[in-house]
Length: 199
Image (cartoon, rainbow, N blue to C red; front, side, top):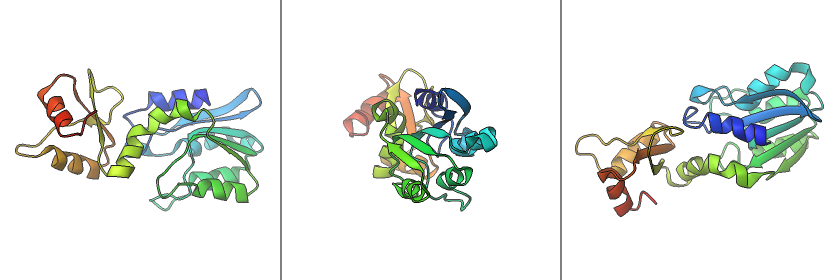
């Protein structure tokens, strides 16, 4: 699981509008395949890892940093369906996925297919990966943080001329951004803090 979490960390800021997810497929101590969400959010980590493992995935254990999707917005095969079809024996999940197309739906599908599912394994280590993702789902707005650089963020918060902070966040949220940054100590950071958009 730590390998899956580490893989997801590497892709932070590069997979929006989808969260960065790491997936490792193993049998015992033997790693058969590992993958992470591709740039732009597709293909998903599980789909890539299963293709790499091929037939060896049957009977294997899959470690995934975020609960596999139960349905895809695009209508293509969901990650839980890919896992079921591959014949994996066990799926170990770190963080739950509150997105409506996931939110336990994939877990229900896997269990119904006879796949053993364990949730919450190393959840505390994986949760920071999905703080911004959860914030966006709850508020509809990207999470903004002050930082020294934009590494690991989806992009910078930049206001159009005459645009309010809230309007900018709504605009960028509609574009799919989940995690934005502003320069530490900047005027914009101070204004964000005074309006309650920055901790």
